[in-house]
Length: 338
Image: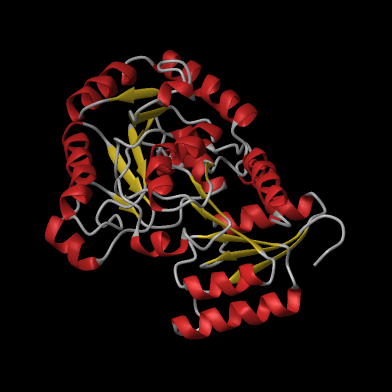
C-alpha cells in the first residue's frame, strides 16, 4: 500500500475510448494519482477473470479498487480484497428497472461502499445491506467534448429535425414492454417529423420483429461526432428505460447539453433540482406532450439556440466529471483504515 496518496485500480468490463473507465482513469492520472486500469471482459470465463483480478491486486497493491459494474466479479473475490485491507467501491451508473440487478445485489453486502447514479434507489440499497450508499451521478468528461466546427457541406449528414442517440431495439431489460416504450415514442415521432437515430443497435431478432421506425446510422456517436450531431440537429430527444426513479436519467442528458444541443427529454422525479425547464432544457411527461413540444420548438429556432446555450454553460460549469471523481476519492479516503 502507498504511504501518501491512494493507489487506485479501476476495474471495468473494457476501456474503449468512450468508456467511463477511460475517463475516470485519465482524471485520476491528471491529479498525479497512481492509477491502473483492469478490464475483465475477454479474459476467458468468470473463474479466470476473478483469479486474474486477484493476481493484479497482489502485484499492484492498490489502496482502493473502483469497480464499474463488475459484472463478472464474485462476492468471494471482493471479500478477499477487503481482507487484505483494500477499499472496494462499486459505482453502478445504470438503472434499467426500479430494482437492484441481481449481480449488483450480490456485491453490495461485501463492498466498502456502493455509488449509484439513481438517487431514488438509495432506499433500496439501504434495505439490502448496511453498506453505505451514495448518490454519484456520472457527469461529463469535458475534454472529450470540445467545440467542433461542422462544415456546411456536412450539416446535411449530421443534421435533422430530431435526433435520438441510443439503442432503439433492445435496452438491457428482460421485460420487453419496458423496451417498447422507447420504440413506440420514436415511431410516433418519426411518423410526423424527420428523425435520425444514431449508434449501435440491439440484437437482430428484436430488430427484425419490430422493424425500423426511422433511419438509423450505426456508427459510434461519441466525442467530436456527438458534438457535430448535437449542433447540427434542431432537437435532440431523450428518454430513459425507466422514467419514474428519482434523479435517474440517461447520461445522454449531460452529454447533449455539454455538446451544445437543444435537449427535449422525459421528465424524471426531482429533475428540477438540477435543471430549469425551458431554460437549460425542456422536459415532457407523455408522448403527446413530447410531440406538441417538438412542434412548438421547431417553429422557434431562436428560443432553441438560447436554451441550448444556457444548458451548455450550466452543464460545463456544474456537472463536469472531475467533481464526481473528487467526491469518489473523498469517499475512498474516508474508508481507508476502517
